[in-house]
Amino acid sequence: MRVSAKVDYAVRAAAELASAGEGPIKGEALSKAQSIPLKFLENILGELKHAGLVRSQRGTEGGYWLARPADEIKIADVIRAVEGPLASVRGEPPETVKYQGAAEPLGKLWVAVRANLRAVLEETTIADIANGTLPAVIEEITSDPQAWTTH
Amino acid sequence: MRVSAKVDYAVRAAAELASAGEGPIKGEALSKAQSIPLKFLENILGELKHAGLVRSQRGTEGGYWLARPADEIKIADVIRAVEGPLASVRGEPPETVKYQGAAEPLGKLWVAVRANLRAVLEETTIADIANGTLPAVIEEITSDPQAWTTH
DNA sequence: ACTATCTCTACTTTGTCAGTAGAGATACAA
DNA sequence: TTGTATCTCTACTGACAAAGTAGAGATAGT
Image 1 (tube, protein in one colour):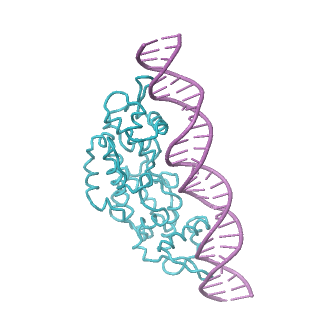
Image 2 (spheres, chains in turn brown, orange, green, red; image 1 turned 180 degrees about the horizontal axis):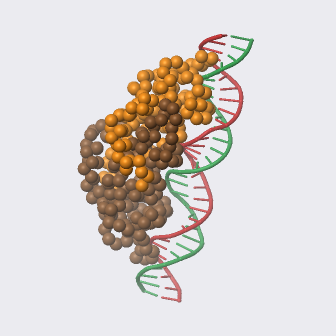
Image 3 (tube, chains in turn yellow, brown, cyan, purple; image 1 turned 45 degrees about the horizontal axis):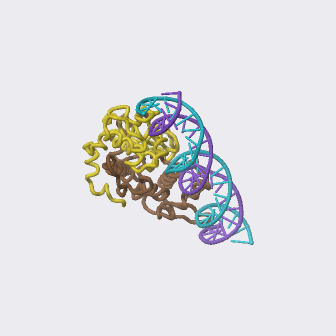
């Protein structure tokens, strides 16, 4: 799993919007708060808007805001909005790939990989990030020092 | 997580070697058994060899075989051999990225993602694939019908 | 010596990543 | 209604990776 700059930026921008509360936030303010190139950020916000996660207004009093309460926007939603499906095998959904011979059980493995990704990304919301209170599952997983090693 | 053709091929080739048992298996036989383009497969086997997972011999009686017992080769080993680290955030290891402001807890999330990937890929071996007997953890994860849906 | 196989370097083609550029639309203010 | 600040949309670029292809060279066995 490589978390791209785009996904990283998208989640950070959403968290910033969540923590800012109600009113519209200007692109430039987000750009500065999270050190994201403005034009690149605008592209990303456009995709989030198109996916219905963000709303916006132009003009002097314009800016961006979350379309839904932050605790109803999962990290998985943000990733899907800017990058498509969470997991794929050679471009196909994991459950559709067929294997022959000795590799036959491999499909099940990729399905398990996706399920474990979801266990993290579908449980955590933008509000969790903004508040710093991650779900108990995540705290448990990351409480193992092994999780923090590169090995 | 996008599973690339290269990773997919590498795991399948390794499983095929595992199920074939002792003697050297020719590249062309592997290529046909798993429908992998021969020259591409040779590149991949070269990387597996360089990583010490596979050994080989040239000549008429030549071929490839696993350097270690199949139950001592984890899927994670194969992935690392051909693609590098299991998880990264903008090219860096998850535990090294620093966030500011509202995004601060994000690092922990990426660490949890990697930990959950490892939970699958470090527990399953090439032997598990070849025998069709996946670890109990994997069976449990994939027993939930939800794991098989695209949603 | 011959042949089959692995080995190594290089090349191609296509697509994605990360970002940049600039003209156009629109909301608000004076 | 003119101006200005902001979002919006399309297009472009340069670097890199993904997926394969090509062919000459090394070596093990017959």
